[in-house]
Length: 112
Length: 118
Image (cartoon, rainbow over all chains, first blue to last red):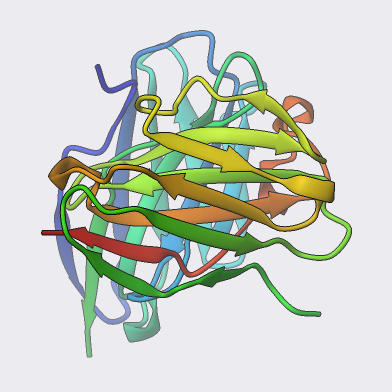
């Protein structure tokens, strides 16, 4: 049973606009979340993370929001750029602290 | 500094054959992870080494999969005999720290090995 869910397989956005990628999780014991970005034929690369003691973390154009009561997080990219086109994975650290639990990913396409 | 490397990049084998995937982590990284992504699905954890010891192998699908990390440097993942459902992309990741400290941003992934079982 999936513990981290990304229900939108794809998202298309115009350059300069905001991209919002969503992620839901089922285990309320998760306390650290990450977003990874993946280009074709490459491995995932870390983008941004958030601890459950925060509700927002910002890094340049990327902001992650966490709503613990709703077990929901989102990644905002503002402004979106064509180079942001990639697959974005949401992940949580498992309770044992031994592994990342990933969602299925959302493919973002940013058109110029 | 060299990143995580994986070999081969792509392997096509027949059902019933044996395949060995190799991962070279970033030098000095004690933690090494194997993950797998089956087409269109999530990236799933397989196992975690700390140096040469298996810390967590709860994600290994069955006993056809054998992972080793002799000497605490590179790691191999052997699939014997391979089945159709083993097809997917196998990722290796390494980090200097464990995830328990919540510092997963230091986990570096290799480019993956795409395994196709016919």
